[in-house]
Length: 328
Image 1 (cartoon, rainbow, N blue to C red):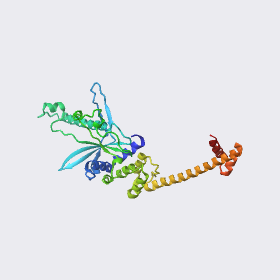
Image 2 (cartoon, helix red, strand yellow):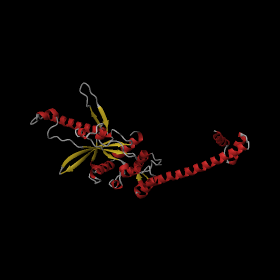
Image 3 (cartoon, helix red, strand yellow):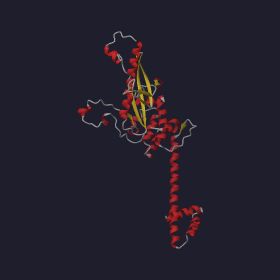
Image 4 (cartoon, helix red, strand yellow):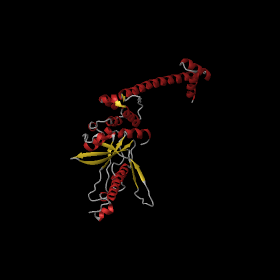
């Protein structure tokens, strides 16, 4: 995802209420467990050198779209969950492998940080040889990482949803020894009405608009039934316009946008254009018939142009254009 779509969707998903809504939908079925105020932004850049050494470094840099930490407090103890979102406007056919790499880099960084903390501590009392060599102690624990892909497209996701689906081998005897990685995915096309009701942020309106963007009648019905479309946040409206390519006129000086009115304006403009095209086609048919008659009566080309201009109230240049088009 590049350009305006990338910028707008990233800013949209960085909003804490939208981010929390997406993961409450994914993990908790819509229950409001993750609170927006408990989310903390993290550096989205992860760096790893899987083939490198001090003498031959081969750094790999991967950048997540949105990455946040969630603090879970229970019984006065704090636990953490790392949450990442990847925005896609096009289907990415290697997404499971890419996400697996992102998550693996994050776990590797956690292990490295654990080893660094132990080295800083410099206390080797009770440390086993294995703990000393690995730098990761028996009591150390990793912070879970959950990556979610949100597809901002109206088509069905026809790409793989797991690592096993990407494999050239499909034999279960082999694949049972190959760890799978399943992708967490939200797509508008697969979103049911009941599922949409579990969303409470503007993400709901964005996904539903995308879902029905190719069906104007269903889109009109959606907007009539959902009053929120009459006063939607401007930033959200900009996201909808960018990802669907809708010709919605948005006043960037206004905080809210009446999407119903904007769509009706587009519809009215389309009707007017259709009427004009119909009239234009009627004129063209009339001109063609007139030219044909004048030709049969042996009128000269110049006389035909003058007659067309006079009969249909056209400029000489436009009348000549019609005659030239007829000749070709």
